[in-house]
Image 1 (cartoon, rainbow, N blue to C red):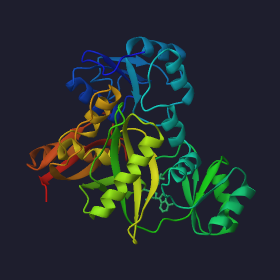
Image 2 (cartoon, helix red, strand yellow):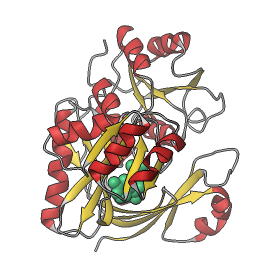
Image 3 (cartoon, rainbow, N blue to C red):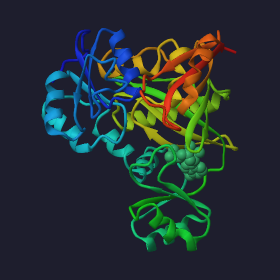
Length: 360
Ligand code: AMP
């Protein structure tokens, strides 16, 4: 087992080679760490800034063994890492952060909301269903319209559909693949916000200011941060973050998506046990960004202050929007972040820009 704090020169393993892994690798390298990425694609965005890519699936025993030999600690850039892979790494004597509890809670929407409610954190009302008849009963109990989502593997608005009439619930259940679902009451929100927060190995917690998020077609388009919020609302978000992080005995950065209701209450929509797209503004808006904060936590270093130093509008560059890199590069207020992806498929996250203004 590694001893914490890990000194510079240690190796951090990252499961996943996408843009989040890339930005984690950049931050780790700045602190003097080496990064090894485990990824199916030999030519990934993260792999190109890491010292080495181990090519393989996340559940490939030989690849996991090689990772355990190479790394002093392991983290991940997406939450659908198989639980068995984390168990295999742990059995090989490696620490994985965030730990298995955070992963299992975040991988299942029913377990997630059940955990949140048990911590005293509010969510929309929900019911679970595993058969068409149960889906109809759940829709009747929650009331229509309601939102049916697969319990597992949904992201960016995929794997979910509205149910307008109880009579349609069975058809929607089948359309979602006939797999176990959650049925959610609609959140009558005025804004979607998120709080990015971190917990260190010593239990210290640091929460960034709230971000206001705008989605298009289920995909994040724009973040404004720090969001204009009242002090009680900011306090409420910090309390939620502390309950979630402590309840999971968490190590690392977490993204918590929130619905702000008209009466000022916050409901948690979803937690992501990793660095988060709604936290990209911290790269140019905070003293220390979410990527460095995550590496600090995972390596057992002290957390940095999560304080804003600028006002940021973050825009995701989807598909061919990143082709305008020269225009963005010429804008004085714009910081351009490109992920080095080889191919711009429609809707694919190719990069983002942070437009920076002095703090209000
Ligand atoms: P999710 O995949 O759960 O993050 O949901 C994607 C988006 O769907 C959210 O950002 C919301 O805009 C919307 N959404 C999800 N759940 C609900 C809900 N219970 N009520 C209203 N809108 C929702």
